[in-house]
Length: 589
Image (cartoon, rainbow, N blue to C red; front, side):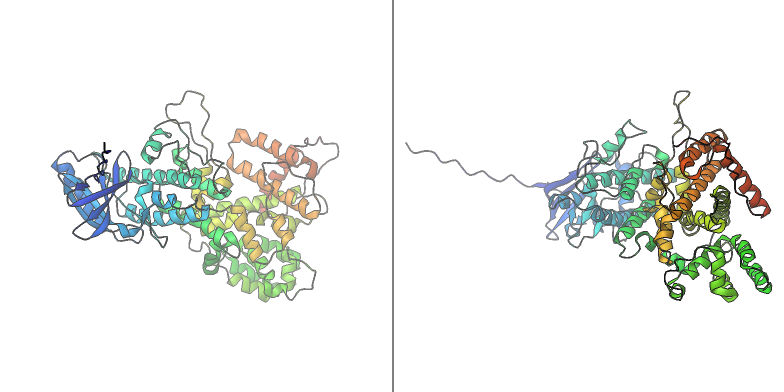
């Protein structure tokens, strides 16, 4: 008997959606789906995006198509152009040219996990398109991996704006803002997904992830420590802020998240100076800080009093922080440094600066300053002035805390320069500085919390700066100081000691000065930012931290701060604390 041959399997009949042949599903969520289709009329492949649920009736369909027509009119290099909008059997769709590239799902499947820098490049491009759409009043409402398309050249385009349908029953500006905030949270989830190379909360649908996150659910989303590539701390802070457990700490504006990622990317990519590149253009155009009112008159008065000694002139110049910084920047520049005696080291006093530059140099430095308040608005100028007053108070407190034998002016200037990054951020990035300030503030417990629930803590300054600017404020100040010609020893002194660990035994005078300035800055931060009932315990903790190095008691800190306040108001020099031998000292921290 002859064996019967198995008839060949007939290929399945192609599925059709109107005139389009549906070849395969590229991605889906609970709200929308994306198909790879073929358009026989044009003879090319297309990507079709459509809602998962058919609009309920003619009015809902018209609302969907109205948004689709608005989307089709958008023109941005990071938004895929809509080649056609329409409906088949009351089922609406958007069509995009497949030549735009692969969905991010396909792109990731074809290669090894991208580096953090490559990931940030992708998301910066996507955010540029999303920001443009948001500003046109068109949120996406269903951002998924398959809604981001990557071309062969690496250009990212967003597809499917509005494909999930409009906000249910609400087309108000508030609804648009809420949808835009959800877009930013969805992008944060996607950023976690691509950096970690794993689904967030084991869900591929960003909508399902967000439904499980606070405040809708109980889940907290933070970037895991096990990732294909090490994640730099600044980028980790940005990613974690994007999905923060406290809604107030999340990004709610695409430009804000884009600015943070761009800041991190520029700091990573810069060949010289790293974080300094964020400030270079602005330093050139508006200077480092604006001069306080009347600086020209004060300099003219100094110039007329030729008999004044350098130390008397230095006291008057120290009252203007911008002029102090400008003079030290000038005298430590490459041109002036090259004329100094080899081995003399950097110039860190105004007295020596006056001797080197002379009155003509002082006049030129004063004339180079922008008059107060530079380009700042009145509220931003007031905020900068408050920061400058705090820095001056810290400088005077450091003079009171300094050990015997250490120069008062050097101590003051080291303390000021430990705040250089904070001053520059307040002047050059005022909106970002305010965001950092707000992120650092504690918040009341969420509504409905049981009585006695602790307030929600704010972020640490470093984490808040990473999350807003993409770089550390301390690093900005140090990079600028390096650019101005300050050597390694000065750069070492102007970095505050980390508060997360006890200070180590000083190796020399530079460490003593660094510790004195750090202690003063920490003390002024405590009295300026903490509730009154927490100030006393905080000062005790600071005194304990520095007891072994500075031999100071909590009472010494109180006296130093009182003396600094009095000196700030009167303009008189501040006296060092007594450090009486019979006074009980704080215990080693």
